[in-house]
Image (cartoon, rainbow over all chains, first blue to last red; front, side):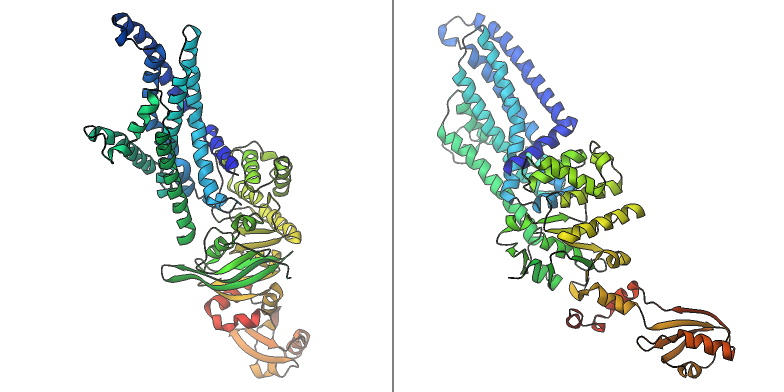
Length: 248
Length: 317
């Protein structure tokens, strides 16, 4: 049943040009970044004389592309997640889902997975694009896998937060703005508490937990953080929708 | 074991402190069509939302084919097809896509989805609209898609909230025929403002006003109220009421306006012929005689404005 809801969401995204436009625009941005990074690699490395200054091509290009990707997702996810529930609320299509034999958890999970599946297309494309470096070089696939996993987890957390804000309002734009502000604050927390690495508030920051992935390290603590983050907001969304049924 | 398809037990819904629906109880058996009547804001839609699990009742419970909506919502919802007042259509999809999605979400086996979509389209007369975007369909066709969506998984209970709004007369006739057809082997609950419609398609009628059930009974009870025991007689030289009372079978006679008299008679003894004879022989100048029917509207108004007129218990028989 979750799959059916997810299918419905994917179908809605691709039924309008929006899904295609977003995919192609983002891929264009990532492709440009990739090309620039490869060019820069030669420029930088030819200037780096000592071995300590040299980095591998995977790390150099990968960090550049994944860094941009995580930043762009900050804008892309709110735009995609904003309509998930608020649009249904506004066009009064929620009763269609509520009166079908599916639970609220399944509805929310389905919508969440639909969005993450859509964004995963981008992550798979980025992975494939970076893999092409392997044609003339010997790249570190482990690094790419760690980065892709980190990006998927981060995007999933963004989406969960986006769905929650979408369930609070009837106006998709408000949902998008709220999501963006919340995500931006969570990304920036890291900056404010940079001086004190052990600060608890600082460790709530999304960026800090993405950092280990971006250096190629898969840390279970960071995975747990992202999973908990997503689960928290999905649970809140289910509760918000349940309140609709109870309070009307 | 009873075979009620829908059982509503003392449904109550509070909004703030106000009771939008209070203490509504009724049952519906297989093969019955129930009409839900009531003025705006009477609680029709709220009741329907509670029946379909879209809204939790403050008190009371709903059972669909014996399955409790609150305890086993998934099983109960699988037996219901619901068309809310606002059509829940995803306008960016085509008719086929939307109906296939509805079938899958209602648990139709994936090998049977296509067949189910075809049957639903056929029943709602949507065959030639398959590839059109719902957004581009006319109001009436969108309504049909809404109905198709509600019957696609051949549910035991079909609940339609004002299904004929926005349709042209031919479409309305089709939809009524469809409701009757669905009502043969399933149960149907419809709400409407159009009173003749209730008379045409429903076996049972419920009139709800200010959240309370004011009438619950067979359509025949309502019809009996309506087919009156009165005659409207037009006389150019109207005599005294006493002269009319002298005719056999006449119980009451009163002047409605100049030259018009309303005559109430006893049961089956229709004194029309006797009145005509008397009028001719005594030169009253008869120019019109017709049964004086209380319209369904009158009955409706009577019930919703003077609740005490027919106590619900008595009518429920």
